[in-house]
Length: 320
Ligand SMILES: [Ca+2]
Ligand SMILES: [Ca+2]
Ligand SMILES: [Ca+2]
Ligand SMILES: [Ca+2]
Image (cartoon, rainbow, N blue to C red):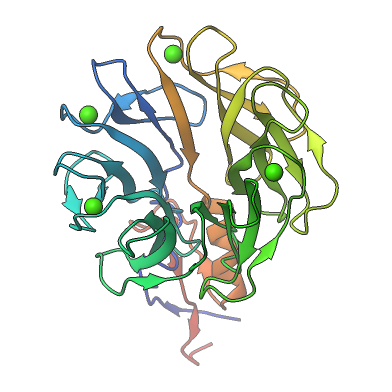
């Protein structure tokens, strides 16, 4: 029995559950030009985070919801910016004259994969630290590589490439090794997102005039169509039960959310402007709690404790 405890706080990045903010980041033209917004997981509380005449797009929210990265051309070319969830602390991470875009947070929130033309040829996928340092090139092929996204377990980066003469989805290790093709259907296959069970949702026009959303296993098997009008940009909820996506079914782009089996497709944006590219952060409190417990830590839930919800380590001080 533990009669007294000593508490040691885990690093903020690894194990802080209560502070995790589950939000859906998205892009919208509702205030006159493309800006970055977030909303609550039920579609309420839609707030604008950027305010610049430049094109601000393609947000990715970190697993714990503490940072948002996005693409902006406010410097005169596309660069990747990072900011706090309230829009403060805006920082240019790339500062490179080439085109940099499509940022995606790693599963641990410590790195960002992105697409860049800085190599001088076709767009390639790179990875960097969240302060912009340590840039490493991961792909190097003829034809484009783009739209990187991490699997929630951190083991894979899924991306789109034209390297085999058609747009297909590929996987690779986060160091760029073991690049493997996952789709083989004629037409567009891209916009991939990986759920906590390893399944990949993506959009494809393999069976339809406009792209719609499909789901498949991480090895490319078991492809199932989920939507049927014009849908792109799927993003899994943290527990994998839902998928946010963009659709043109109402005559302009809107963000919708559906169950991961395609049922209960629900409209989350209502404006006649363009609303698209939802990014749902990938690690909610339950996942953080599991991570803590697996690492020998526990989630502190005593409501009287000021750091309620933080992961702490119980230490038996021997005074039984
Ligand atoms: Ca803007
Ligand atoms: Ca740039
Ligand atoms: Ca294809
Ligand atoms: Ca709209």
